[in-house]
Image (cartoon, rainbow, N blue to C red; front, side, top):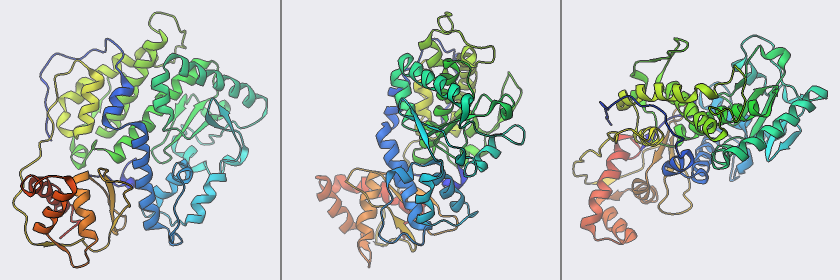
Length: 431
C-alpha cells in the first residue's frame, strides 16, 4: 500500500558492485510497462483525481467527471491547489478549464496552444518556471507559424527515431506550448509538477530541439504519474542526503534526483536511437543529448548506493534501466499477527468505485488536506466487503467470503486476508 498526497507531490537495498556506465539504450517502454502499462497508469491517475473531485467539489452530486476533464493540466493544477488547502473548487469551474487554453493546433496528435487567451489561466505556471519576470507564450503571428512548423517537424522526427518511446511518453502529455524567445532568457524547455501534463519549449530553431525538449519534459510527466500511483517514494525518501551534481555542483533532494535520472536515461535512449554520438544527427552546443548517458550513469550510481530510500517500483525502474546492476533488495512483506474480531470501516473514509475485481483502488480520508491511499487488490477485496456491512464484519466471516470469491480453501485465504487487513489497520482505514 502506498500513500502520497497530491498536495505534497509534485524496504532496503544496497549495491557494492562496479560503477555503472551507460553502454546501450535500455528498453525503456517495456520496463515502464513492467511496472504499469500506460493505459493502466492513466486509469489509476484518473481514479485518484476523480476521488479528489468527489471530496472537494460541493456541486458534485451524482455526476461523473469525464476523462478529458481529469486529464486537463489546468484541472489537475486546481485540484492540487484545493488538496493543499490553498483554494476551493467546484465541478463547474473544473469543467470550464477545458476551454481556458483556447484554440489548439495538432502537431501529429499533440495539442499545441495557439491562442493568446491562454496567457491568463497559465500565468501561475509561467511564474513557476520563469528565470526572469515577464515570461510569455508565443501563440500567434508569423513567429508562431514558423515555430509551429518546426514543432510539427520535431514531433514527427521524434516519432520516426524512437516510435515506441515517444508513443509511451505522449500518453502523459496533454498540452504543448511554445515560449516567446524575447522573454524566455535561454530557458530551453520546462514543465512543472504543479501543472502536470503540459510541456513548454523555447521557440525552436531546429526539429531536433523540439524532439529533445519533448523527450526531456515528457519523461518528467511519466515520472509524476508513476510517483502518485505506484510505490516510488515514501516518507523515508525525504530523510536521504542530497545528490550533488558534478557538472553544476547543485544539490537535489531524492525526488528531484530520481526524476532527473529518469529523464537523462530516456534522453540517452533517444540520443542513441538518433545516432547523436556518431554524428548522424547534428545538435547545438547547448543540447543535453550528448551528455545524457554520462549523467544518467553518474546519477544512477548514486541512486544504487542509496536504494534503501526507494520503494519497490522505483527499484524495479532503477534496476531495469541500468541493466548491468545486480538485483536490488526489495522490501519484504513483514509477518503479521493473527487478526480477530469484528472490523469496521473507519469514519470519514471514502472508497473509490472499482470497475472489476483484481484492481487496486484509491481510498481517501476526510482530513484537510485529504490523504489518498492506494490499496492493493487483496486488501481492496477485504475493504469492499467491510464497507458494505454497516455493523462491521467478523474476520472469520471475511475469510470465508474471500476464500469463496478467490476460489481457494479458507486455510489458503487467511494469510492473504491477514496481510491485507494489517495494511488497512496500519493506515487507520479500518478499526
